[in-house]
Length: 364
Image (cartoon, rainbow, N blue to C red; front, side):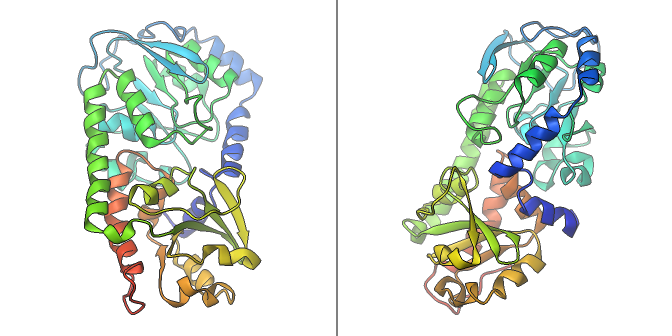
């Protein structure tokens, strides 16, 4: 569980909005030239080599594929060794996909929120992690020297915003798989992320099985709640009093609602994110509004907004306030492991909100 100040930062989208991604990129690119030179002098293998100079025991918890594999990404292609044992994840939720296919990374990237979780992983990933204690690397600044000291044979940065320079430095240490060039930074869909990581680890079958389990959860939700089909849902959040945001169908989080059968309203946006002022809040007046908050104080502030409280969606109790920090975290950090956890929590709330009876209380 994380404390309220951390949750507030999380819900203000430091990590996962368009503006937040820019903040992350600036922070990551802030590594000075001295650090870059140090990393270059470590003498790691190139991005197309094996990178296995550690001579140590593996951290994967099992063997991977039998042959080297070539992975395409934003900065070209990377040849991954046949059986990577010392895996480091740079992407913010890459470790979830790694754990989902039965591999335990030796180090993971954490931020100021996930660093407060045991071993840097959230509720939904702890069973897969087991007793392992991967080293936690801060995401604010890539520590190239420390990564080189850990002697990885594979670096994964699929859900990330690596720059070309950062990628080049990491590739000198070990084969590195960067984010896809087919999506914006920090917007790789969870299925694509899982498949790429499964391919990199030689565990395509395990990756497809993990994806299939999530898809079945979505299917069950749609089958059990046909009323979701065609209902219009808004994915909303809180920035400050009287200032909100909505995510469009291009958002990986709004995609959860779409997969459950909901449709998204046409809210003007530049990309997947639109700021919505109090004067525009009527844009939220649809069948249901899902507020990603993680904080009860924010929910209270929204309910007290004199303009919002006049909307039919508010008067009739068709709004869902996600105040549980773990659920809000799962929505912000979507992965093959977080989705079943989140959907299990959200479906009963969404069903109560759209049942057509204002007297039905949305469960906490």
